[in-house]
Length: 579
Image (cartoon, rainbow, N blue to C red; front, side, top):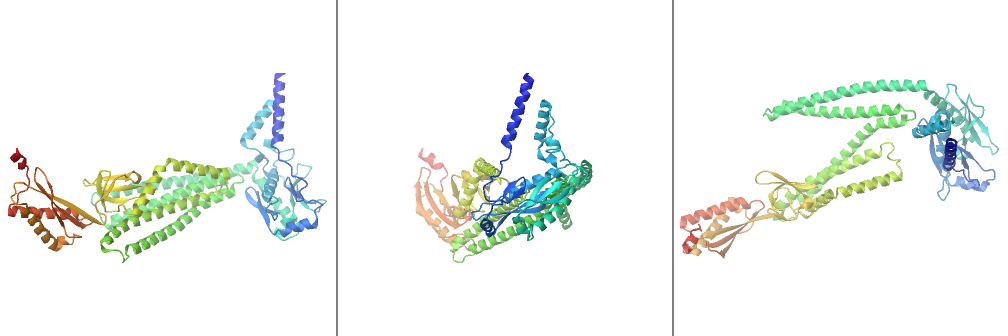
């Protein structure tokens, strides 16, 4: 009793599921054509005025009807003035379902539904076979061809019906509407005859293609072609690896000091060949995937589109590359004009030339990044199925991008900070800067980080957003504050000051060193008196980057002058004298 009750409950649940998931019938009193199982029936009571209003709208919604994935018919539905359509896409979908019953009835169910049907039939002991042999008797694949007839209903509509060899009743497929006739420019009777011939040929061809014998033959042929392509792919990969080993040997010879034109030509040739082989390998992989997709019934258009994707991708890369080169040239031209501005003061021209190098490199990088993003989006959008993605998938993609932006927010901060560094001219390539205690020459200003080469020749990479304290020693000009400590044992401090003034005049008059100065050196006199001695200061203002060599030369000259005239500099003995 319990087993019978369980089977009864399962049966009731199945019936309720069928009722809940069955499509709703079209409303009858709308005044417009009704869609019912792919047939559109014109209401007999429709007035001429209402029909003329539909035709006066002057536009139709079109949709394609496919057989095995290949478009066969184009059906139309009139569009009203307020934008509401009669549903050409829905009508085409229903017609495709009706036609699919004739050549592929097993496509009604998915794999999970077939398994569920088998489990339920095993439990209840009934054989419905909805997912294995089609809905009802006679809708099965056979070698006998079917025929399509044209019937006329009471309203004068042309109806196409299919007659199967093993079925007594005909299957209504579709109705040739007045909108279809208007779009094709013929009468409904002529269009019905054309579609009858077309559908008979296409459906019978599909029935032959989907027979088990033809499918097995198709899969065997595809397997043989895939194995041949796999052999070619393995050969290309072996050639790529062999050429790469040869290139590594030539690079080792160049590192050992062997340099000649023949070696360089061979290296460039092998590098080009490896790139070509890599492209061929990727192309063969796409071809193998496309052929595998084409082996599936109804997936031939998708496979052909996959095969065309590499060619389109190469064309897109070429177009974007040309646009990138034009963008680079435009950036170079504009920056040249900016750097060669004659209104810039002479003391700022060297700085502008220095900024030009940094801006040129960064602008080229921005153009390259933009080109990569454009190519990536352009290729991904044209992948079959991506452009027709639902709104929910697009929303999920936007949420994913937002999550990625949150995860990589540090990179975004580095990028914004790098743009601010360039726009505000905080430093440029060639500047000697001190950033958070790290001192060195700026060798690269990137989009996310800055590279500095220190005195010991190590390269420090600093994130742009992590820079807190910056000291630029070579922006527009440079300077050096020279401190000279004169001993208290020196009898006359004026003598030391006079000697320094004389050396300043000689230094300015020297053409080799005077041109490095932007202004007259400033003798600041006595700056501080300490227990060690009296401190004198001299301020040198030089061109950008010339401060250190100028400072060393000036101090050397002052030291020689002090030695000649007996000026005593502090040497620590003053503290002993005090004690």
